[in-house]
Length: 585
Ligand code: NOJ
View 1: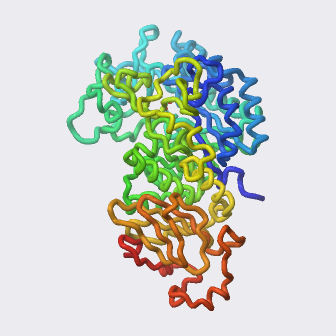
View 2: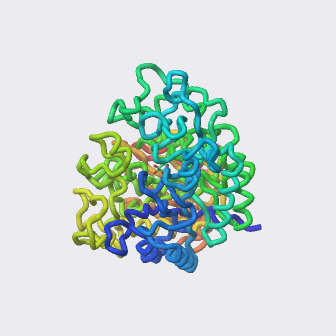
View 3: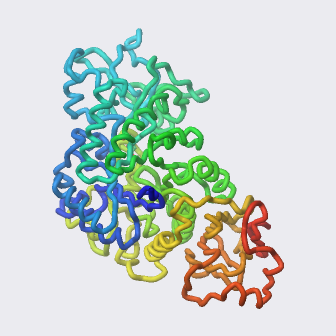
């Protein structure tokens, strides 16, 4: 049996609303996605993940689904989606769609029925509880978006639960008919040719059967009132973070749901990729083992500071525990673009590319978010824009709008995204120079380097075939990993440490560098700060520079020959370091 098709794949997240507007209404759509499939295939990604396009009131921009099996007319039709899927396959791309099983829209027919009476057919599809003795919510759970996780419904005199907006009622996964309905939904999409699902808040779904209060993390926070959804507008999400979520997320039983889904997916060779927001390698591992999910995102990649020890100490346990069952996001529609997170400007973009190169060196699937291939920063928006419900509920904040501004394709008033009025402004920092057109075909641009990186990754099988990962440097600003004794990936995470010089084993070849200043001279790799390189340890085919064979090299008696550098294994890696701020100091 060969390896699964998703092993070693590179993903690309499309935020459909903001990718490309084909019909001029200012909103991205599926025809826009279809038009850009060749762009994505040329870029060298393998998996295209589409954010929700389902019929939806758009209270949370599509993460409030009113029909799981259709397409919202604002985004196109089912026929367009199916044609897009076929074309993607012809281009060698796989299409993954967003499945939102934790909650529906309050407009979903199940919920409309459920709230109509206590003995409605679909009543038990949702989580209904009696008020607390004082008439308040049944417990102290809060919504991710601020405010209580419960809304009182006058018609039937009970509260319903929602871990997000009141317009996103949580489904009741203790109800077997909900489980059956989702197995049918999965089977339908996979039968239609969809290659997999990205599962929204995959660690939620199941709640404590006794609905016990969550403990508060520390003192000093009041539970939000109904009429005051966020006590502190600047920290709406922190309200959620102030509780220890022992009873509302990551409950026993949730992984069992995915074991059942795995059986459905296996029939179609489809991928189950979880948005499991658990920043703990051991807990996360439970989701990707024993025939549950095939892969899960590791969200710690979005949290790391530009610090070599943090990169090593944080990512290494994930790799050791879950290996290639992980997906590594560089950015997402919920988090800042990497270039912004790493300080913006030229340096932010350099760091983002270097960091992505490193993620491409790990086992598993690196994921770009649209615009990352340009080194794009978040759009600079006025605070009054407030389209994201987090921003709407928390006046004075931007929420996630800045990372969702439309994709700038080419110079011009609508930046090639739309001929109409974009649903969200581009941001005052978008210029002709930040467009795809300004970079496409220009060697050395962020876009062309990203394309070169992905081509290199595809060529070097040790990076995609599940080869073991060895962490070569334990300290210093350069993080070096080795894959399968064939490839090294080095990332200089310095901040004022200066360039590093790494003495490598004989006969290496520089396969990819994020900057022209990265050089391999003889056996010494010169790595400036904020750069990364991929090195072939034993090149099998000639690159641009003719390689000497091993015997010729031995005859040259180079300085490095006094070290046993032919192989790197165990603690004695054989990497020497002569430079200021080098890896082994
Ligand atoms: C995670 C999604 O990525 C986010 O955009 C959404 O608001 C929540 N889940 C709720 O569905």
